[in-house]
Image 1 (cartoon, helix red, strand yellow):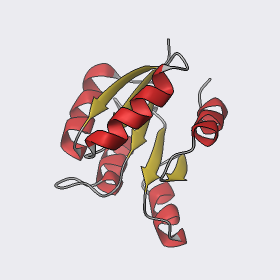
Image 2 (cartoon, one colour):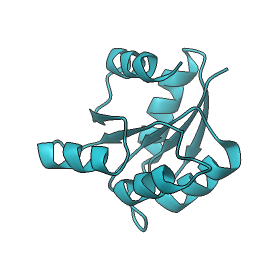
Image 3 (cartoon, rainbow, N blue to C red):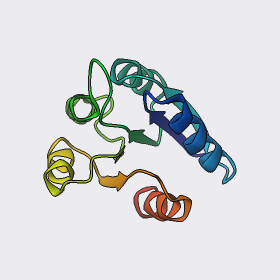
Image 4 (tube, rainbow, N blue to C red):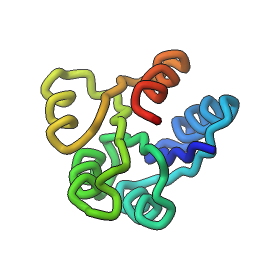
Length: 120
């Protein structure tokens, strides 16, 4: 079963995305901060990470950069999922190591297509 880690400080977003992925057979774990997401990524080594950007403490750009530079987690693809809809944000996310960028609200069909493109 494919394991996905969802990192977002919004309990509502965590619930919506977890429910969306769960009904399609994905095993989903969650983290509510960048720091917690990094710790869970290192501990569980998920197949993919969905990362919010705007979070207190370590933001999603910083967490993505650290994950992409850590030998233990560098192979895990990160998709940034955020309300930030500027091209500069998209470019910056990719420079930090993200594999894709989705603007909220997440559309189920779009998310599933992106997962199929990235996951083996």
